[in-house]
Structure formats: C-alpha cells, structure tokens
Image (tube, rainbow, N blue to C red; front, side, top):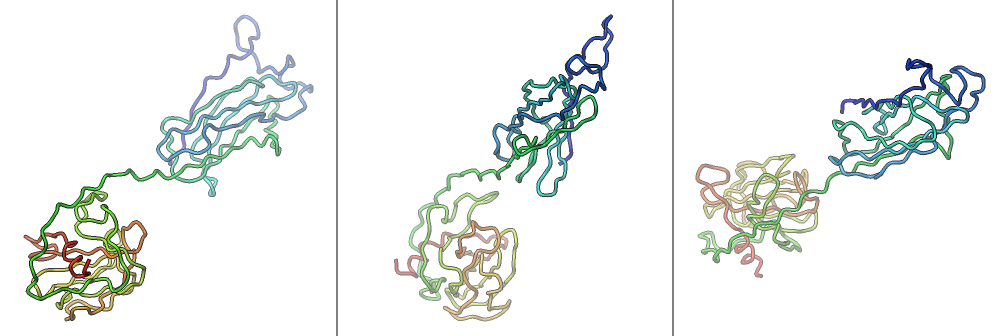
Length: 311
C-alpha cells in the first residue's frame, strides 16, 4: 500500500502588522522565548470506530494537543502497519491551535488491508520540542481491520431426478467406508460456488475415513489441485461411467494411474484439501461419456448414493 499525504490548510498565523504574516506566536511571547518550558502533550487521540472491515472508510481521528504557555504547534499523523512498523499513510496537519479538538480523516486513496495498524501523532512546538508521551497521554491509538465476511449466496437446489436405472455392473458400493451424512442443500449438485456450480454431492465424514471404489474399473488419473479439488482420484468404472473423488487427505491416495481396482477397494481417505470450507468430506461426482471430455456431463449422484447406502 503506497503512503499518502493529506495537507490540511493551517489556521492563519498571527499578523505582525500591515497584514504581513509574522512569526509563529506562543502565548504572547515571541518565537524562541525562554518562557516556553513544557513539552506538548496529546490530551486526546481517539479513533471512531477502532475496528473496521477491509474496504470500509478509515476511522475518524479526533485529537487535541495541549502545552503550557504555547498557543500553536505544528503536527502530523503517521499510520504504521503492525508488526513491521511500515508507514502506510502520512497526514500533515500544519499549524494547530493548542487545546482545540480537531477531526482528521485519512486521504480517500488510502485503503487499509486486513491487519493491525498504529496511528501515531507527531508534534513540534516553536522551539522544536517534540510530543511528550506518557501512560495517560501516549499520542498513539490502534486500528484493527477485519477480513470481510463472505457474501451469502442462496444455493440453487438440484433438480429432482428419477431413480437411476440399474447399472450393468450391478449394485454399487457406497464410496465412504464409515459414518457419514449428506449435509444440507449447499452440498448438492447445482449449489452455487464462487465462480462455478457444484457438480457433485458432498459426503460428510471424519477425516481419515476410507474412500473406496463403487465399481471395479481402472484408475484414469490421480493428482493434487491446490486451489480446487485438492488431492483427487478419477475412476473409469466398469459400467462405462467415470467417478471423481476429491478433497482426499493429503498423501492418502493408495492407487496409481492405470491401476485396475475391484469394487470396494480403497482409493484414498476423506480429507479437506484444496478449496474447501475446512470440514472434512468427500466430494463425489458421476460422469457419463467421460470425466472432463467432450460430450461428458456430470449427473446427480445422490439417488444412487442413497440406493448404495440403503437409505
């Protein structure tokens, strides 16, 4: 994030007669007078709100500087990203009157990403004395920027499909060898996902539960897709259809490409790899014609899964 500077027009300096600007005054004493003793103090530095969501407008910064015997000081604000302390914005406030509350905002072009930030006030009086920081008046405040919540998209329910025709390979084996459930509407084929439509059925199960072949066949592919299916297996079934098993536990695949497998033979284990919500499950697809080939298309696997599970 590039640093940014907002210039706020300073109040008009005290006149030195004839309308000509004079030197910076401090409590009636000329600049450099020995009457100036105390250092400036940030009597107020607050943020409203102190927590925002990434993309929102930055908080309003309210501040007030006080100093005994001084009426005007020069000030600026620096915003630092934590924990690196890298400056991401600078706001020059120019000359301020002491004991006056001022509201400041960061330039519109400054966008704070998710993370933590420190807003720090810097002040100099006419003699160059800098801000005195104490436990009561530290001259600092923190901003927390939260990650935006994902937008809720209503799932599109899968169309009602008739019971599947008997497979020429006979009854299939349920692909999860352990306790399971079918989840809610968002686990069905046709549910909306970020940038695509769900093409199979999610089967919720404990991590490490064996995933097995529903029919005999040949393994046509095994691979890992970091931003999508995670660790996956593709089975070219003996009934002429392809079966896709995704989000397997990393490193759990026990078959290789071209391997011939029997119905019920272990393929991998339930996991949560790739782009998932984090809950372990098997993403299961059935394709006619072929998986990801011209003319191939996924069909709703839920009726057959229910039949295989006897539910």
